Length: 250
Image (tube, rainbow, N blue to C red; front, side):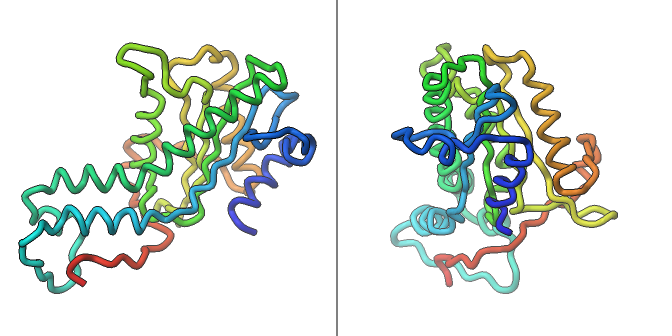
């Protein structure tokens, strides 16, 4: 079963109403599920693009400048060690981050619109809007980068000091299959869960966040672990797989 199908099965187990199935005549972009007597709107976003092409483009345009010789590296080199040899290391890292995370913001923006449309269409203005990102196997979308990006999206404003750029998303839930934590008790796939610092729909949001975590653990037949920051710091993050990347010096 694919990770996408597992998420759909999970939402069905929660009693979710599939909007596509139950309301097939709704036109235009719409969210995917209604949960808990339509008090929650869920939009699923699958981040299938592995971002390898975007990453390679940054390397080819930023790592080697016109007229510069192509460096040669012998043996196994960590990417950051390679970038540290360049005078524009910070510029390259910033460009890589923007390139690999752009798909997250595009999906987030689309989900924000779809959730808003469902609130208006079903006349449920107080329903919580939840975005579930599905990451089957993406080397670049690791927990640390995702936490940073989602935080930035929650903080983004339409104008300096203005209202939130994406006000209709109340919660982000990411049960990733792309990375795992290596622990002394074996591998653990993380579940990431965030809510914005400010939303007009705060009532019941913490309960919802905890419920999704608890039900997801039960659905998978595992205990729900809540490691402390210190415990997380002691765990090693490993990608599910490493993509084949064509570097400028290959």
